[in-house]
Length: 208
Image 1 (cartoon, rainbow, N blue to C red):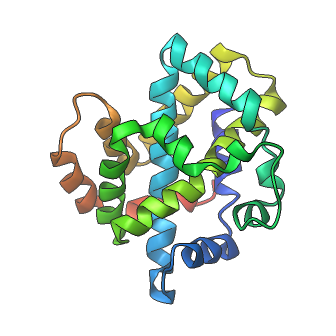
Image 2 (image 1 turned 60 degrees about the vertical axis):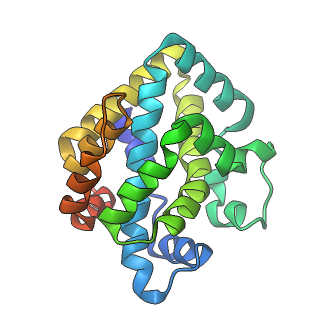
């Protein structure tokens, strides 16, 4: 199931989707590869943060309730239509990227944006905007997986932890981003991520 979740997310990032995202954040044509790399870093960061939050019973229960209430996965039926406002989800909270980021990352969101910006070469302000656009997509993918697989609270936590662990093994950038999300993370990790750069971030989009 862990691989299925990542495949579901990876499958959303077609060339047209990357072009749409780049346009939404005001990127130029030359920014498109940076936007693609930043999107990979954002998805990795959000999965890592969700896994960390779901590692406690309270966090897992809170996430489960949010998915049941607001994220049924229907956003994946027409991602661009939903994100552009041409289609409306059943719950308006499904598209509240700022609220989702606040719940998932809290006061670490700006630090995460800075790291992803340094690694991808994309301006941190654009990374912040991209993060708010992509947060509903990540939650929608998780909600769809929960619904399709009939996951309970414990299953959901296990899925996220396995997904994070698998991704960490495959991508050193994910390992560094995860370290940042841990309580003992420090600013030096920002430099480590920047040194790895967008090449490793881009590996997220390689199909198995």
